[in-house]
Image 1 (cartoon, helix red, strand yellow):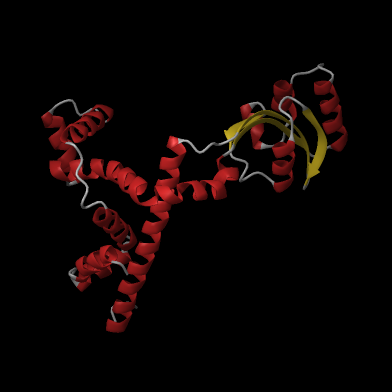
Image 2 (spheres, helix red, strand yellow):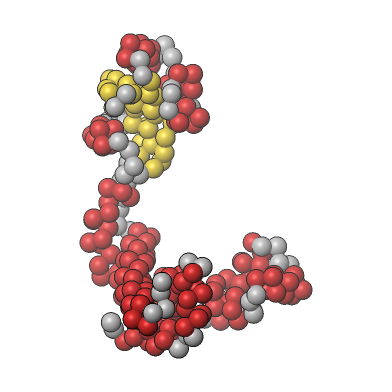
Length: 253
């Protein structure tokens, strides 16, 4: 473990055993350790006072906390103090800063691994079990005799029926591999002939393809993803070590 993780470990070791057992039994231990890792990583970062005030103002506006009295009621209900809330609101900003400082150098490589999941596709989809009907509907759309939206709403047997046959913009990562393959190579606006996926006959048309590019926003997102993965790794090690200590002491059934 590095110095940061060792500091979290020391803090955890100060917790009374019965508190650790209680947190574990309520499935709260991992969440606590994770937040401790994040806080420790960002401990040296100081946000401008004006930034914190703006974040607080935005929070109060969003939650309808129009004055100090309503804010105090909220804090009492949540069991927080005002400094607690200000700290919590500042964490995402600190995480963004820390992530860029420590993980931006690896962000582009991470982006290239994730690019296929980040590309966005919008497509029309109609699926039915009857082959003859699928081909008939395809011919109607191809000939301009019927609108894809209307036919999908009337005939599609998949959940895309509720969106009138339109899917996306969305990643293709969860799409069937065959559908994903066809859409990745399709020309926007060109109707594809019916093809079979499992029990379905599918008629589809790619409407728009938005390919992800490595810009400033994506760099921030990739850096934060790498930070999150690092936090998960540190949390896993700490929780495992803590559980091992409890097993050795007979505190885990």
